[in-house]
Image 1 (cartoon, rainbow, N blue to C red):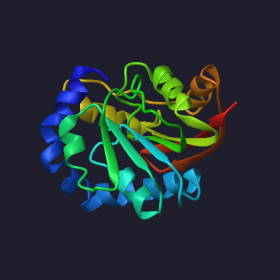
Image 2 (cartoon, one colour):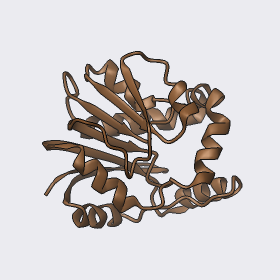
Image 3 (cartoon, rainbow, N blue to C red):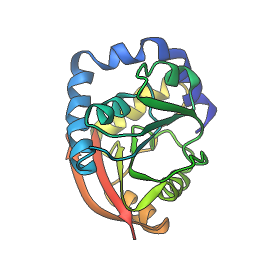
Image 4 (cartoon, rainbow, N blue to C red):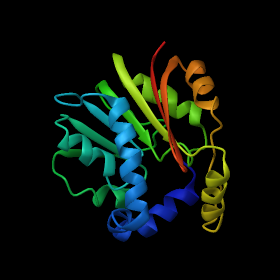
Length: 198
C-alpha cells in the first residue's frame, strides 16, 4: 500500500471504529457485510484471514460467526491496535507481501483493493494463503457515479482510490490463478466478488 493511505488511516484510527458504527455509514457497511458473509459461506470452525482489516470490522464478524482462528492483517499499526478482540490475531504487514504461516478456508479483502498499488499482487498473495477448496471474498468500489464520489472524497486526503469496472476482478483473478464464481452489487457503493482457485 502507498504511504499516503497508510498515513491517512493512522491519523484516524482512534475514532475510526466508532464513526464506522454510526449513521448512514453503519447502514451501508451492514449491507456490505451481509453480502460478504453470504459469499464467504458457513464460517463455523473455519480459518479466516482478513487482509486490510482496518479496525477489524470483518474479523470481529467472523469471530461472532464461529470462525477460528481469525488472523487480521493491516499496514496501519494504529488500526490493528483498535481491533479490541482477543480472539483476533493482528499481524502488521502489506497485503501484497505478508506471509502468514498457514492456509485459510476464507480470505477476505474488503475495503482494501481501492488503496493498493498492485491489486494483482494482493490477489496472488491471497491465493497463496487459500486452502485448495477455500474462498476469497473481495469487496471493491465500482466504476459508477457513487464510486466517483468516493474517489473525489479521498482525493481531498491526498490520494486517489482505484475503482473497479465489473470485469476487472475476474480478469485480475484469472491472471493470478483464481476463478470468479459469484458477484453481488450492494447499491450504490460496492461490488462483492467470490473467487476460488482455478
